Image (cartoon, rainbow, N blue to C red; front, side):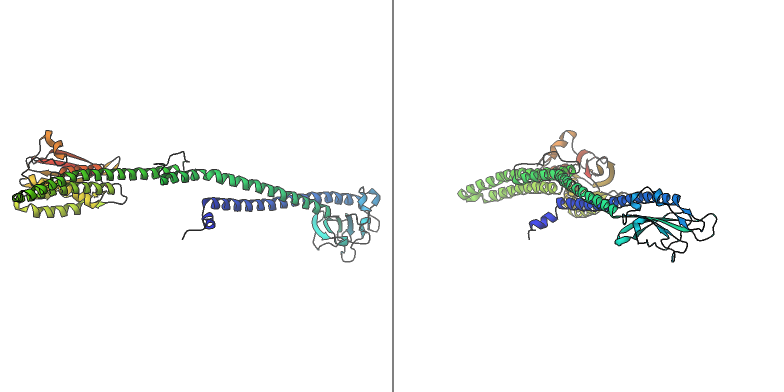
Length: 471
């Protein structure tokens, strides 16, 4: 079932990036707004309390006690006219030593007939406390207070209070919060636009990659060409490597198909010609059978040749392909001992070192094809003995297998060693075989990036040294 457009959008990188960015921006701006509003409120209230403390200091400086110990404050000495205007929003009050009976012993004219109700708390002498309380007509007041004690008295301290209406301060805070909200909203819009632009610019290379892939799919391009960011370029390089490998496989397949068709064409033409002659001369039936058998053998050898090449080309570089060498060698030696046992040829395997992990990086069929052809060829030419040895080395490209097969046969002259590797070349027609063994081995080894060398064995015959990729 094909996903809907909305489902594809939710699963897209664009949606994930935008959603994550916008959620983070929203959380950050909300927290910033709350923090800034609280900081501004604390700053304003602190400044307000400092102003009230200055007013409290003025009342304290003007406070005097008469002969009976009662406090007195001359209103004429107070500079702010709001002290005498009823309910002006600025008030002062002095409470007696017993708060329950002497609340508002003295108070400003602005309080008129009201008194300020204070929370019950204990003040050290001279220490200023700040409170928010209800004032006249239910107004919210910010209140500062301190206590003072007469120097010549031991009575409970008197309580001096100054309070002011918070209405103007609250209005200022509301205006600030409104401006802050508008500013943060504008900033949020700008940041959202920046996030959209960032996502669009950041994902632009992926759109280019998508268009290039569409061109490859449509056949208008063979590779992913273009300049991509460093995070995407490795993916592009790997994909181009896959395309190159596929193109190489297709090219090889076409070449091998053409070669196979051309190789089979000649035997088929020969058999068709012989069949036409046989119809005219029935007495040549034995010659026709021999010719057909010969040409069928030629066609079979070519088919085996191309099948081996195709299998090796398909397995080349296949991830996870690995074959242990010991079981393959043991199996081949058991088979060849039965095949060549009548000739008295002894096959010997030099014991592999226990600490070496001899593993071939390829397909088991290809390893059997390589070693089977080499061992079979050695057995055909050997007089008494064939020996195989293997070891492993580490090179710049990784682990490499070194396999050496020796026989005590006549060997091959140095000038003719390249000739026997050619396809179908045979040194002695009396020895059974197709003449393709060493050629197939050379081709398979080359496809795996290895090498094959012919030399002189210590026992006098031919030495074949093969290097293959290991694991």
